[in-house]
Image (tube, rainbow, N blue to C red):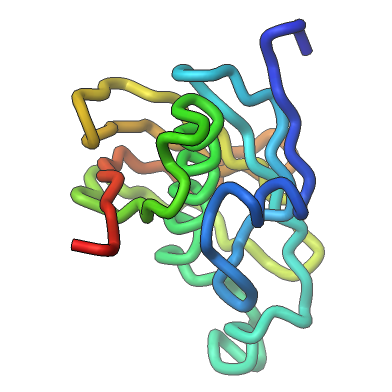
Length: 152
């Protein structure tokens, strides 16, 4: 970790993005390099509410929630990059492409969510994201997001 990186605990994450449990899907964010990349951490627990129905006899984290966790990590990087300019704004998906799910994510897994900015123009941002457990890729996607003023 160099001098230009930022690490965020759960309290700092909650100051940057509006998500709250049960849809706050990251526990911390490490190695945020402003305007470049970040790595989110999600400790997957059997206590997650989605495991009640997905699936009771073989609990698996839904792929859509893995992509959402990647996006939340990206939103934290955007918030660090833009600072006060993101106060009161929301970040919405604009695209999800090339999503691939390779291995189920299960209770007890520690998921690392690495996102890299690939483009940005005004309120539009594009990213690649790779989710991994124990160094093995479990999911990946390219996605776009847009910062939005909810007052409009």
